[in-house]
Image 1: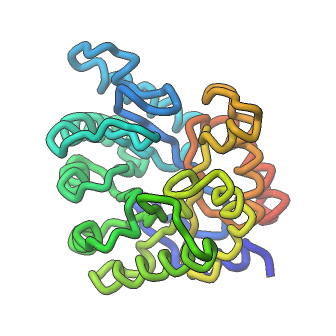
Image 2: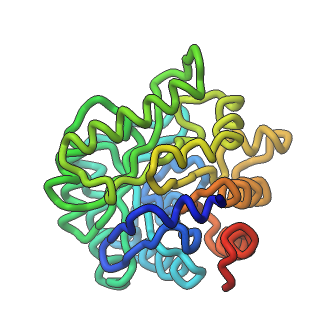
Length: 293
């Protein structure tokens, strides 16, 4: 049985105006950071130098570009999660993301917009502005507030694996147990299984060696019975493998993880460089899923 066969057994997920039919193809999520300190150097607030309204305008331009390059979902975030990041309070994060999401939703009403946040109040404000997916980097947290919000608003939720410190006795076993427990808590809070997507959390709560194990063992996630999102784009582990290359020179390494992830059955890839990853996914899909462009 191929990875595509496994994915095809999953119920489709409605994300805003679009029905995502798992197993038919790999979907691409474009990253849109409304921050001054993105690790990837692409934060919109850094590029517009605080000019009034410029962040929203720049975000819409970038959103149109990503969709034109083939992105199926746009993931908007207002707080960097890079190592050593400066925490942003709830009010500031809301101010950053809500006008951007509202403007993108108005400009591109047929494109699902995701809110990348771990704060339920920010997520709720984003949903009110037009977001139709929650992407929570602390999806395995014991706090069920985000689960209850997703259930109440009827929006799908990405549960990402994470830990405060990368301490494990048996990494693969504990990683899988963390994911199963999070899925159980989400269901108990009222989120239907068809609205849950899992993310192994490459680069979060893991050493570089753990990240490589995640890539090797990606196919194990099929046992969870949920579609899988993979976010490796420009991550430091890739730079480390390439001799310390900076973020802007990690595209080829990212494309390797995209192709390998698709071969292991990944359903969504979350990326900065949309055009190149869309092209890699089209070829990988033709090989792994028999899906011809």
